[in-house]
Picture: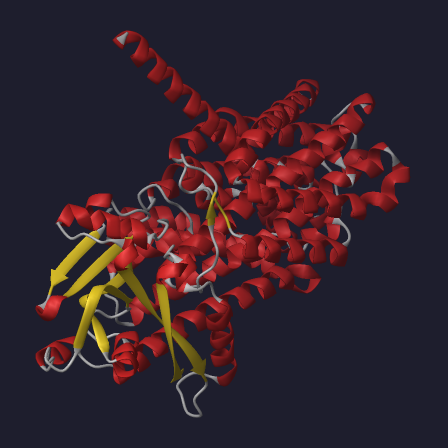
Length: 631
């Protein structure tokens, strides 16, 4: 019996690993896995369409070594070591990098700014990626059946709408559903490429990095522009890191090294071999790899794969939003966890709607993948550059890596990142402004919320009464105490909550037991249950409870109160009242905050999710006391 139980457990663990591996294929590698649809064509378009052995070898060499250095070496091997207890993404990395400095000072401010800019750029990329991926696949219909050309945009919009509607089911189910499709996709594109390589084996010469270097140096201007197209081959690298919390480091690495990476290399080299033999195939080298009878099935498969490709940045945006809310960079939003096994799998309705509207607008505005190619790449290369800088700060300042060797390693990564970023800056007028505009809007929102919260906290501090002074002057004979427990949610346990003073002023009573509860978000993904609570007992039956959560934890105040039993402090929810502050924030005439940013903060503060719902407090136990505060 014991042996059977062990075998069943091992079988269950193996199945779980396989599901994670399949899910990683479906969610993480959809973006980078569909880049062969448009990358080669964009590269030769940037060279003016000139096809020769020199240009084909050079382009392939640059693509191959970009995949090796940027994705395999930088992200899969190095950057994924900079995980915040299993969680990835630029905000998780920013939290790690901030450990190398104090909370005050210019260094802290610069690191935080870099993290916010990187996060904003990721959202900008999240708008472009689904649009260009799906549009480029559906355009294959024009190759297979030219009469379908007028229907390309409607079909693209319908597929994108279906993808965003599916998000509410959770990335776990989406990943398991999409995983087998992406596995088939990688196998087929690898086989198609391998068949062409067998026909044109000399194409393997392009593995020599000298061909890429020679192409860049022979005509530096056009070579520089070419880099802006080569980067399209690696644009899924940042999503790979951002989605690490969904599936874990090992499944992501395994899926890349065993299937995704080899398949991509084979397909790119197959396209290169085809262009050497038939330069006319440049109109769509990816679909020209397939025999005529397989064109329509390939369009269907490519459409499915590109819908899946969008999942990587969508799920990454969900994770980043959750982190931003918990770290205080965005107002409280409704966030639903969609898996009991994988805590990182979440759904954020407002972000989903924002991305859907933005993506559809981009598709209708640009109308073709060629036009969108100019808008693609600038946001993700900016995020890649900032990720490299923050990883260097963390590895040297916190992990204790050798400074000289680290600067050499990350300096090499940063040189490549900045070269790609600078090349993409050339495309701002052609459409690169779109992701930059989205990123600028997101950065203004995040920075305004962060600055507004700081001003609000300072203003509350000036208007508050120190708790020790209140307790020192507390006169039990003058204040009536009623049975039960009052829990006052507060951002500062050293001051008397405004709600407590209002209750005392208007109702002239206090509960016989008063608890000041403060929720603190740590710079780690999850806080262990045994470290969740801190408790301090004060005079006059006043108590302070500090509840600690990680930036990927889900706050749940009733559950935290239940844990207090472990500290011999019991709550009966039917005898407990929660007092919350409901403030009306108004703009002061004179304040260190520009008027338009102040208005942005006030609007966000008014529409954010209320504390009752966010902290899972029973609504029938909540008492809200209002007030007004100027900022």
